[in-house]
Image (cartoon, rainbow, N blue to C red):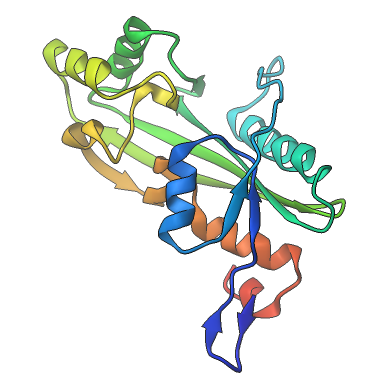
Length: 204
């Protein structure tokens, strides 16, 4: 991965096991070559499952299920969720549900968790990234605006930090890209672990 003779980083091609346009945009932004293969898995939470365990389980399941189709290739899976008061906040089912979610976030801190897994030839490395986000207090007009204009239905917590929600976010503690949907620095370290690259692993 890291070619010290040429003093440059060489990122191996990945199979992105995700249909998320935001994850694809992040990969493109850092110049990481990939192709996409969207997994078809059951994302139902298990009874009593904690959020951190849930997102890592889904990330591994996504990566490992797609890796079965790509012998010798590195497959990346990820799953992101929002946590408020210890409860998982998933994707809204409609605009009214999005308004309810945004109302629960307004004026408060919440946590964004992303599980990441990379799999190859029966091996899998996984990890977790956590970021805290605080929304400013919001009026009902502002909540309605964000729910109706922020394209919330495919987003955990009903918002995109890089879009209209940025108007209402007071603070972020941790990895910004995690809130967008993919903590790419964690991906980099996990890939280094998977392919046993000592230069990359030293960055972990």
